[in-house]
Length: 327
Image (cartoon, rainbow, N blue to C red):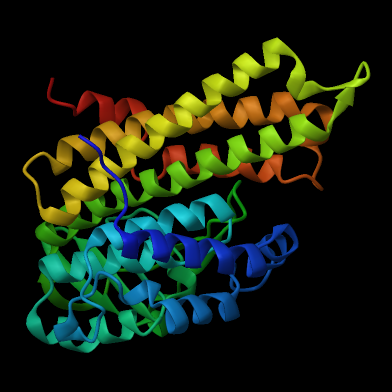
């Protein structure tokens, strides 16, 4: 059995990679992370208007592109590889929660706005929410209710985080209009968020390997590129195995989720647990094989390290997901 991207999915990934290489280089990532919004608004507009990333999984009935969730996961993997700060995961999770639990009026009003590129966020119970302080479409799950919140009156506040390329906000969700079933919305948000993080991790894993291999070709020690030393070759070969396993786990979970397979929840737990442990190890290897330069602020290895450990916590730690796997 061979599993791979379709021609259209390959074109989507290639287009995103090309655009992010031009607009999401190291300097751009740092500038976006340090900006007031925490992301590059012009890059986000381009991703939404020219590629339609926010609309990929939104049904055509709500002004979306009508593709599957798999295409959104392809986009997330490329964003994970680039390290570019982006509200795509936050908006995707919010849209899916609304589709699962929102009433028809809320879907008709809010989903076209999300598809058009407005930043959306959803707070689950009392926890912080991705990009909540920047969202113009703001939802919250409280008990059995799905609430629509007014960003102006909910007083969302930015929360400092170790990973500057992911933005979180806290908000007051005590008041809001009930727009649907909170139980269904929460379940869908957690499932899509888990698989979405695994897709980001798969992209990050590839970036870590690519950076390390490129460095090993140019760094010279004892008159030879360090990549020619057998011990380092073995370590990078082990990194490649982890990267390919991350992709396999992420793609399997993404595909199962996109077709509504019965084992989607199981594969989500497997993907998140495996990818979390793998990217933590890959980030450590990236730092070690780059040497002292990797722990400096100027080098991107520290961004990979922070992103890896932040994603490992987001939507559940590895050991929690492993405990939920039905063996």
